[in-house]
Amino acid sequence: MALPTPPTVEAPPELDARNRTLVERIEKGDKITSREEMTDEYYEDLVHLMTMQADSELAGGFGYMPWIAKAPGVEEKLIVANIVRDEVRHAKAIYALLRDLGVDVDSRVDEHDYNFRVRAEGEELGTKRAHTDARVNIFYYPIDSWADFVAFNFLMDRGAGHQLEDGLECSYQPWASELQRVFKEELTHIRHGDMWTERLAKDPKTKKEMQKAIDRWYPRTMNIFGRPMTRRNARYRMFNLKKRDNQEVRQAFHDEVKANCDAWGLTLPEWQPEWEKLDSQERYGA
Image 1 (cartoon, rainbow, N blue to C red):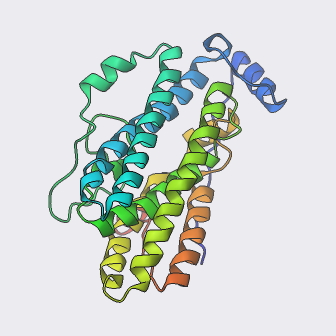
Image 2 (cartoon, rainbow, N blue to C red):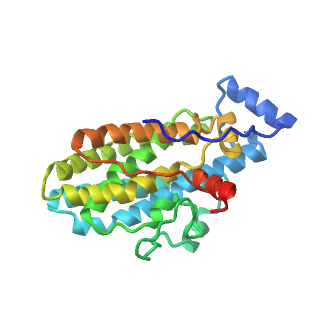
């Protein structure tokens, strides 16, 4: 089933001469390798995307860390420990790229609390932020049970994989090269989430708990892709920092998750996009 139709795309801004020259290079397949080759707009967009990834990787590793001790069995404790190691290594690698571009990474990491989580019962952020770092907001939620861990692994790692896939051939060569390595490791995390989701879904003793976890984490994951057809995303695609609009990535994620859940007897909950809520409020004053 297709997701709701997004609003009409907003065109990227008119380009000045330097940006036009850069876009022409990128359209020919040239790769950017240094700060000196970038316009201010390209640099701003690149640093924003990489900071969001690095902060998310680090916060994700911290969120998984308690589950080394809580995971069932010694083998699972080792697997979770390896996932934590991967996430922190991913953060380190992307922060290193940011440092090469002149970002004061050490001060940034020192001044943010990557362990911060919302704690109010039933609190849902939608697309809002809850803290001052740049992590994707799903990393503000606590993981409170093994079913939560599994659902997060199944849904969020898959969502991250779809987003990473969008940048594997991006125009900034150092980031593209690192994303190739990160993506391969994320695929192993996704397989782990699939294995456990299927196991818990097919066990009558744990199916209800697994379904509740899907009900919690699926809407949260759908929000990570961002609003569709935005001016900023159009500029990302113009600079070949992304390949697809947010809605296309969200749709690919949804279709894959739905196929798996259908096969395992799980049901995806309804999800209403934030932009539909806003449109409704504007139209009816609700």
